[in-house]
Length: 208
Image 1 (cartoon, rainbow, N blue to C red):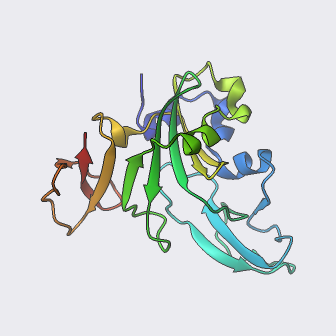
Image 2 (image 1 turned 180 degrees about the horizontal axis):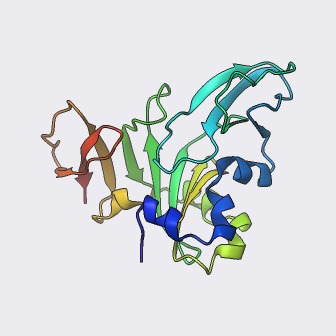
């Protein structure tokens, strides 16, 4: 059974909640990161995010230039963490019992972490081969949850969900969010569906 995000948080084994904490995940993966209140190792730009976010998307995320001085992160929001920045293509991968079932790539403007322009199913084999393996860090729970969705930037795992990608529930190969105030007349080859969320999305254009 696939639960929406709220049901996931209600039903997940408490021993596995660490997976949904982006800071703990990043720390276990060996990334350069730390909680608000811990100084960065060098002056640089870092991505700053909530450790946990049940609302989805990149709410509260920002890029910040932080200095390696005492109290250099004290001005940031408690409950957030900073992490080194990764560059590359953004993938969302659905695994069923540890086997890859869907790979999609997200495209967005650089100045937003919430409003994606579109998601497209990935078909080029080299890109898939770079992320085809189930993340080793999740092997202890591979047989515990039927669906696990992982987000990557390049080959770097950045986020995990205990569900599959509901944006591709129609057997579609493309997903274009439609936001409040935008036209609902679909382009050729697409159809419009009502698919609202709390972030201002009212629907989407999908192509099957």
